[in-house]
Image (cartoon, rainbow, N blue to C red; front, side, top):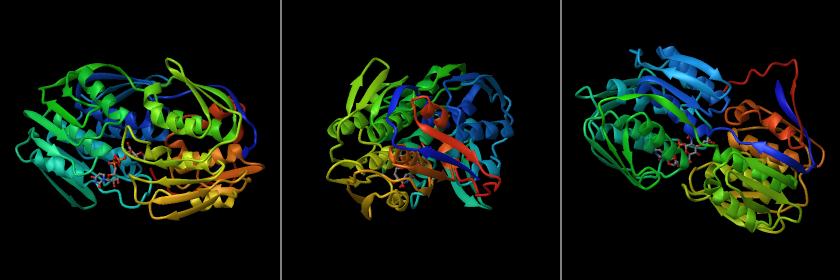
Length: 430
Ligand code: EPZ
């Protein structure tokens, strides 16, 4: 079994570099399927979700070459196969982007239902509604989603999303770039990674307008050709380290970020008495005094991100007074609460609302990561805790955080990976 062992209670000092955005990378890699030629993708985070998706492209017949630690060349020109292998795809949520990309490229796709963190139900009805409106038949049989454009090619149309969905917005964009005519997505999501996917596709010859607003227009083109693209910095990785400094105290320069993308997180930290200074492509985070309570409601961008909810909860556990969190995106994103309680936190959950009574300190405990961001929040709690915290099931964390142990050690954290002979046989869930 592999675990993180953290000796907590040490403030963090120094500088930390942020990697490329996971949730942009996991859409941009499938998007390479639409490109006729070599895509050079730079600033890719070194995380297991990225490795899995590159492996899936290779299994489909793509030529994938590593240029350096963060850059790959992907050439999908010679792929003829639209059936995604089951074992790899089931490990990762973002495998659903392969449906839109393969539909766009071949007019057909066979993809296993996606895996991913368990937050209650994770339907993809809005993705399917979009594909059907564009002329595809979609059904599930034999454990696969089968999608096929009735006339061989997707057709542009107007699609209103009933729910603001990141995945549906990006998936419909992927299906639309090579479609016949104009596709309009209304009530689209506006996350930075949606703009990044649009910029990637436009740099290869697509015609996407309005990404970052709630109406996106995509005029279908005949082909996309190769090019070079660099992925944006990861908003959530940056936010996680900002929260770590808030919880553990200290002063850290979080580098290689787009401060504008962090404003929703910065605003909450400022309310809690943390100093955050914006620089051109960095933020300086400092916490020396006490933390004060606040309320947080997660919402689609530019609201406070649901993917920062467990991490900000870790900070609020140490703030004076009563804080209320309202989860506005997922049905069940409080599975970490029992583990926090083992560390001394006082949290009551009722449906989508968590009420947190601040405590003086966390105390070290043996806990298990239950999903990616919950795992990151447990690391934050461990850094701030008195005593030793051991976190198991860390494969959840490594899906989305590049080199978290090295990065945290670089700012003074006492954290290490410990492998015990008893191999971790737990199934990997993406
Ligand atoms: C993406 O998931 C991210 N994953 C999630 O990040 C993130 O929490 C989420 O967006 C919201 O920001 C990836 O990018 C791979 P949604 P996604 O479609 O696209 C409902 C992380 O930790 N919905 O925006 O799956 C859904 O149930 C991960 O990095 C439908 O009802 O999320 C949810 O309540 C976890 N029908 C809400 O919409 C649909 O067809 C938002 O989901 C689609 C979604």
